[in-house]
Length: 535
Image (cartoon, rainbow, N blue to C red):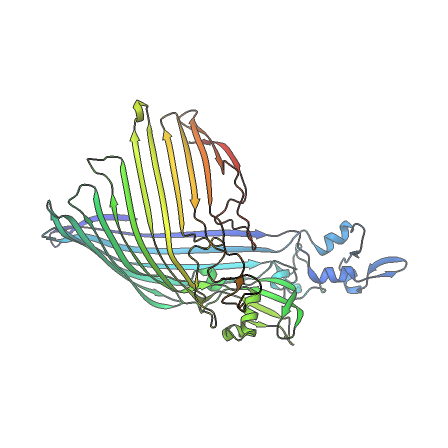
């Protein structure tokens, strides 16, 4: 990269440009997965010349060993046949190339200070390629290897593993961006304090989804009262689908007893988890405003902030399960899903394509509170004592699935999710040059199982529906946890540490559905200790 100053319009300017390339490799290897056709051949046994053998002559010629599934210990040879040493694998390579050029300067002095601007452009290219094993992706005799030899009992088209049928694939997209940003000082006086307005605009051209404009405008005002500052910002934001969401190669799983609501029977189906090249970018509106206090000469060490937020996201990229896709089509709630499956396929295996869609929208608002105080040399002791607390209140968190026939779901205060009404975290710590000690408290408020439920008693309940199910108790308690920890500097380069989470070993709350690990501690008291080395 390069950063250089130069003169323009009688003022100093800076530009920087850079190019970067990153490559990421990831490998997945799965073991102890059986080949479905080999399993079927192994359990289809007969006697030949007084010996128990596989009934298929083709399978016998390719190493089939009979498998007794009704009792006794299966032979190692039979297990090795149906679950070979070399199982499903996936090899992924991702690359990113970025070139950027940016300028910044202050072209003019105004009544309250210099106007600062920045502008620039960037180009980014992302590439994705994945390679899978022959038995999962499909093979022919010419592509056979010693690890995955050709086997006429297997399906040449792939999907031979009971699970983990990875596929080969790839994709790429490019992004061109340009931006302009300005910082305008509007107040600079002892009587009124200092204030500025900041605005920015960015245009982004995605090769997969076209042009998008984003912007923001905000400002800060350092009040004439020492330590106090007002701040706020509102913006339009965009998140484009990533490579995996767009181009993910199919991962196939066998569903042996999938219920087909159209025929009323269980069928064998192949579930394909794949990407969706038709995805659109997610768009959001974000507004925050608040007040902060810090750095006051009359109360050093104390910081405090209160911020209100409101966020709305449209076209959220989300995925439904195979059962939801089929049932929503069957109920004629979402006809757009009917092309994603075929459970009566006459020309091949039954299949269900599970892929992301631009379905949902989210809308949330609330406020965050943070406070801290650092006491240097408390009571004359060396070091510092710090008190810190963070709290958040979710006023509302409405999720609209975007599926016809459903209604938006208010999830604020739902403790089976991750949006309780209140959460806070408090930390007290003491540290000096030799050691540190910390006490931490975590708490969240009581909540409900779901706001969609109608609470009633048996015999007096209205009809239960998908949008308004009935329940006799709709309560989930909050929780309070205490953690402690500390460090000891053995030398300048060696530090020992220890920590106990959930000191009082509090159990998670009971739920008729599941224990929620996003909120509740599902492990119990946990001890950790170790040593860190610095070189």
